[in-house]
Amino acid sequence: MIEWAKDEGPRLAAIDVGTNTIRLVVAEVEPGGGYRVLDDEREMTRLGQGMGASGRIARGPFERSLDALCRMRQIADGFGVQELRVVATSAIREAANGLEFRREARRRCRLRLEVISTEEEAQLAFKSVNRLFQLGGRAVAVVDIGGGSLEVVLAAGGVIHQVHSLPLGAVRLTERYVRSDPIAKRHWKKLRRAIDRAIGEQIAGLPFVPEVMVGSGGTFTNLGEMVQCEREGRMTQIRGYEVTRGDLVQLLARLRDSDLAQRRRMCGLNPKRADIILAGAAAVTRLAKRLETRNILVNDRGIRDGLLVSMIEELEGAGGEPTPPAQNRMEWVREFARKCHANERHGNHVARLAVRVWDQLQGPFELSPGGRDLLEAAALLHDIGYLINHAKHHKHAYHLIMHGDLRGFSPGEVELIANIARYHRRAVPRKSHENFRRLDARDRELVRQLGGILRVAAALDRTHTQAVEDVRVRVVDDRVRLRLVTRGTADVELNDARRKSGLFEQAFATPVLIGMARPVKHAARPRSGARSTAAAEREAADG
Image 1 (cartoon, rainbow, N blue to C red):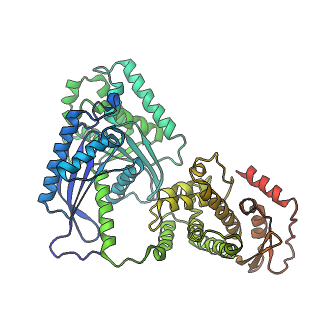
Image 2 (spheres, helix red, strand yellow):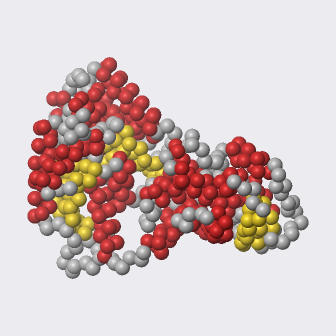
Image 3 (cartoon, rainbow, N blue to C red):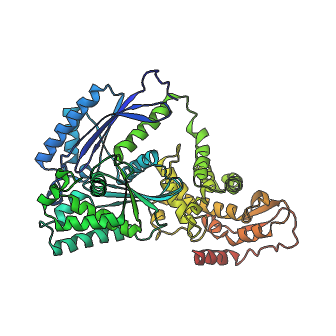
């Protein structure tokens, strides 16, 4: 861990270059991983203004934004920060001259802009919420709306399940659909339809109904302040302030009926945001309706805060004597499984059996050495989808792993682990599955093989009683023979393993014979002839 100075900790700064606003936060790190804000600056430069028509950052916003960045650089230098990171979102991602802007920021301001993906943007917003809000095991929707896009994170028990990015930023929607003042009925209908269509395309089915929405970005902050001002006649601390969907519906109606001059005079609304607040409010309100969420909490931090949390985590990690990732990463997998409230005893047993099978197949089939850790990790996590619900828990496991913080694994390895866990039951891997189609041919083969092993290993603890103590594998006469060492009866496990061996047979192109290491009265020996085809048909029908 970091050796903290007695008087003060390291100073860090983060800048978020958004489509509408550029924000800086300077903070001093405190023992325990928290921080104290030393300065908080923001400037509404409208970087993305006019981009919808031209696809380029216009000269005015280009220069205003660079001036703001250079001033923020000077402020951060004045505080003597140890590290300064700058992230850019949708405007720089999408602009044809985004690279030119980044080069100028480097030349004029000595700043290196990191263009982050929509998923990274959403995950930073989630980090902020995790730090600032005590949500416990509640199902939540974390929403961050900027000028160009709207990110949605669906999480349960503090674990990310889905991440969605929608082209519903307040500036983008305003430029495309708000063509009259006050907005005409026909323009309002087009705006509402566009929002509903984008939400419907991206969020087709909900894995759960979020109990609460936590929203960050200027739109949420201003809407919260407007509700607060109307309720209490004044504005106080806005972080954590709760508004209802009903509040938003009423406020949206007022905004629709008001012209720009009237909106600028509304209590709680930043006059500089008056031209884009209607579109932003419409996007937030329609999303809350789609998610069936009635309560919304305001987060006045967001991406910058999440970025600081990430920087502190990296700083802490660099301060000690880290064990090599290969030694640590499986314990991190177990920690993630605990966070998802997985059955640890079952997961550990399935992982041990799966690895035993892999070790004995590795020689005869020349399996990739790197596959062992991927299989063990997938086995430890294969049932974490129960955190969401039992139905389709294998698919929920895929999403949880994809968005989980599995330290020590590369993004490519995480994707493989997620796919292996995804196929521990139900349908076999097919190219019609988007998650499987994204993999290259070699990785697809590996997923089939390790997924096949995991199916059998999971079946060998079907009753969760660890009745199968070990499995012995031999390859004889082009057939794989599995012999189970059991403690007492294990008829359920034996029959389930035979039933679920189809993917294994398909992946290794060989029949699989499963029996007991010593005779059992009620276990009939399998027929090796037509069994392979029948098992494959049952697996296909099961999905």
